[in-house]
Image (cartoon, rainbow, N blue to C red; front, side, top):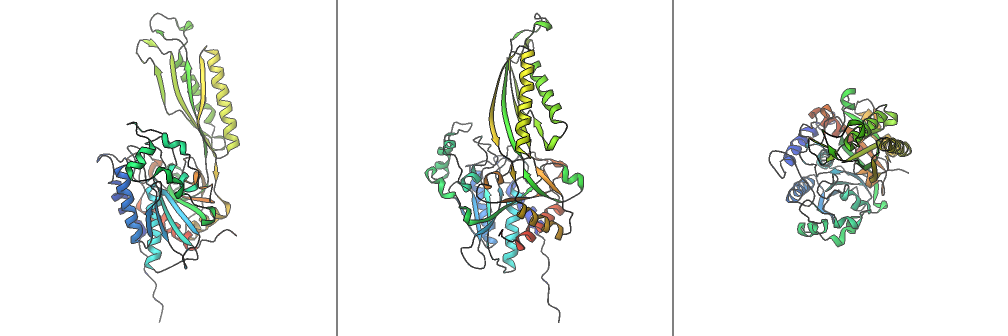
Length: 417
């Protein structure tokens, strides 16, 4: 008699249904907004912990408000493979960025539990409470707490209402003096894996459901201020103007042209600009704008930033504008560990898909987790490459593909010798 083969259970359908349920937890009904230390954070955490327990895990909130689920190995207390992502959102968000990784990981553990399968290591699923940094303008708070690198000076950061993180934690029911309790030791983790939507158009263009991430690009952000001379739009001759906005426009074009050659994955963005005094009939006397530059190679990014700064300095000198440039943010590039990346690639291949490698231009919790574990990432195709927008979407077939690859990776995972 032939042995019975357990039917393949669709993971994708369960994941999609849960994605929509989680998306309903939002500050407003018309758009998705779910930020750190709010009633929506609490409701989302309770929902995720319920799903974790249904999947056979123990579940709890840690000292910073992350959701932590654990599925023991073939004996209690073993080191874990941690699989994680975030469940906070930007404002007016899509529903897939972050939650897909958390919910897919829960579904994979649930599949193992239904089959009564235990592994020679534990599995932990972590839903990080604050990756986006929307409320307090401090990113990766959840994962930095787990990595033991949380900067306690951030506790004084304020939201739009003037409430500090410290005050918001107390109101939420957490003790800001015990954030250190969320920290994990390197010896507890065998590695960190994150499944995430690509947030870009490459996989769709290649007609691939999944991709293997090689590195999370480092980023430098700068705040630029140009000061000229405000004046009447009708009386100051063009040759005598010190127009700060015209100078900023030339700087922005220079940044675009410098980065347009796609040198080593370099990208540059001016995402915010403000001109003062902001009147139709007044020459702008002061302009401030931001620059965001990213590359998978730190050395190249730093050289590129220096080149762009030199160009801006030259434009300011030529136009007789005062210039101030400050670095407001800098994150190093995080390479995915070769041994773990190879296992992700094997899982992709064994599921019948071509192995395609690409870097991540967006930041992720792995940028913090690298301090206590080797990291790897699996990208899932998102339609149009759209993210941080209500139109963000993942096809059900691609959800299924990503979950199947993740499950195969988990079941065949081999700790680094």
